[in-house]
Image (cartoon, rainbow, N blue to C red):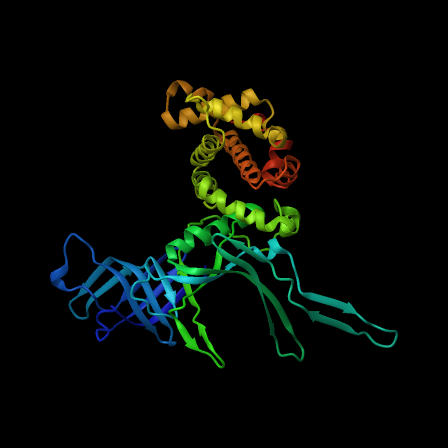
Length: 435
């Protein structure tokens, strides 16, 4: 997200006449509101830091802002100027004042993802060279791409295209197509539910498909309770939600090509409704697997040992959910991993190699890192080998997620073979990498 600053006056909803000047800064590094004064009274200071469910603001540019879940982080005193209070908001709503931002319901969301356009790979531009013998002539037209709409238990989901022009239209003309996801629900849900049920699953889906970290570039929310009169009829006011995303992996802004993705829309378009509904089911039924898998993909600053453990735990969790032991038997981690490899063998054999050696190395490393038994240190992977052993586990979990989309084995193998991790492990096996 881009850094954003809002200078203006701020007040508590219950005290609209007590306005304090200040500046709010919203960035991926942290949210803060620096007040040239304080909402807290001297008599209220103590062990418990003040927390304000909502703080209203009016900026110098005329925008309305609601800062939610504002926890005091600092307060300074100056004998000449008085107190300066600093608050840390949880999220911000732009263009509205809402007293209960955490409990307020919204029935529509427009979400712009960083690589949605690349994943769809659809354009409305049509270029024709109509040059003749006497003079060059070029024609450029634009038609909106065909609408894609899917009904899911999470709401009606559609891809909405926009088209903009710019330039002086004399020496320069700029044409731009953009696309976002529009989600409509019959009943409104809270911001927390929007995140858990809609935006995060879609973010995970696109990150899996594109092999790139997808972030939410913009999220607009709409409520039937926030309506304004337009030129011809009333319409819902778009409220922008701004919050810190749990992503530290660098977001590559260069548009990835479909050949570099696991799969694009053109690969699954004929079955997109069933694919998307299956993915929502995966996020519910395999929530721990998805959380562990994407925690690694989204965080570049994670230690190699933690990445390995997260992938190992994701593989174990997947087996427990999908291939449980029968007759009440208790399976060890090695047995579970061995059975999982058997299930996925045709797709992942080229990166595993000797299955027995792979399972033994994963189990020894996992047990050493989990229990820190010094006697197992010599058998545990470390250094570059630990990194690539973990990446192999990640590719295996990735293949399991594709399996959940009801894709045939040959398609799973085709898709994961596009992953640079798979190609690297296929060409230089994990057991040939030095510790």
